[in-house]
Length: 176
Image: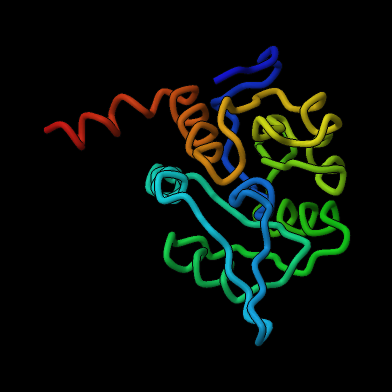
């Protein structure tokens, strides 16, 4: 794991948003001859997202594409807040802030490309996978050592949970 300077307070982080393609997946989009889309998700990433939710944190997905696969994966994990087909991600982010009565300093967001920059520049903790665009990597305060779809989200979730002092109690639950 690598990270830039920590100019935010972990204790304030209440909401974490994630892009899908290029963050939760490797960015590949597979379409079969019938137009049915499939994506590959990392199971450890999914468990990390569940740990955020079980710890009382709010988790959302904000993605530009619309896919039944994403809706299904979100349901499996327990993420209720899913915004798909979003053209202007900052609008969705601001709507979520208003709905949940959050301030930008209470938020983190994981993005990988230029469409994610408006949120990444506004939230307290912008994060990116190791293989994100140079622009996203420059803005990120946390950059995973893993590539998108290959454990990057898990690193991000552990970074937040450890920063908030929650990781040790989570591990005690598994080891007791």
